Length: 152
View (cartoon, helix red, strand yellow):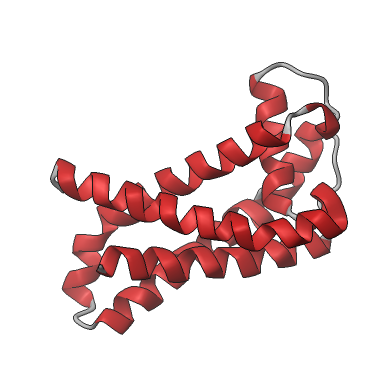
């Protein structure tokens, strides 16, 4: 994949994660961090990286959202790296969009389901089922827009 394509994939990932984050804001406003599993996980990452205490309340929200935007951009690049292979198998635009939705669902399954206990133990937090459901919905938003943006 050439550098311009990597940059385009990064931009697609950033655009998709911005829309994903906007989708998550109402849930955060209503339920706080418990309503958005992604932000809870980013809080744990920030707390561990900055060597803050285990309490998620100490991680600034701007750091959590910044981490979320960074991860979404990187995930866009990874999807962009797979895109040539996906395009070989999937000749239609709809198939590429569905591949992006599948990719975002796999990311959700890895981080919100498989690694949930790891984040809970590392951060001393409980990630609610409600937050995991919001994460699934927001990942579908991410996958839809990632697929749409890479097709543009």
